[in-house]
Image (tube, rainbow, N blue to C red; front, side, top):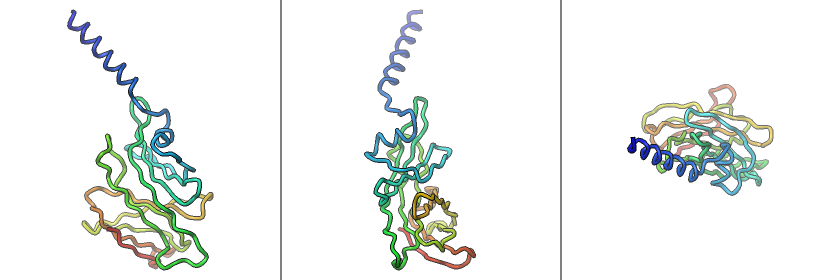
Length: 188
């Protein structure tokens, strides 16, 4: 009987100390804000089987962040993320400026799974209708998700990548007819 009481006391003490030292936040955005000085405006929010992925445009509209937060028993925790400088939008587009790219690695230092690796960026050319990402390692083709947001003069694109696809990709931007190649890039 004393062993059971001792066990229950230790279990209660352990649980209480865990709850007191946990750094979870009540919302996913607050968890991200605890890791970043500024989070800016939400461009897009996507639920994944691993948590919530946010794309956030900072106040100066020059940087877009991809941030991941995971729901835990006690709240939300920041998982991983990365930033991308948005190319300047000009009247005369520079060569190969139809879209931009940023690769975010898996982040093995995370305490839990995340939706990374991922490629993402912005689309500046209104002629771009779709993006196809092809793994140089396996040849597998992945259709990128394209998101519009009326608050910004660009569109967001992203593709979540299985780790086994490697880190080298070719990305092709297609026009509205689905056949015309607007731009191509190699990522390594």
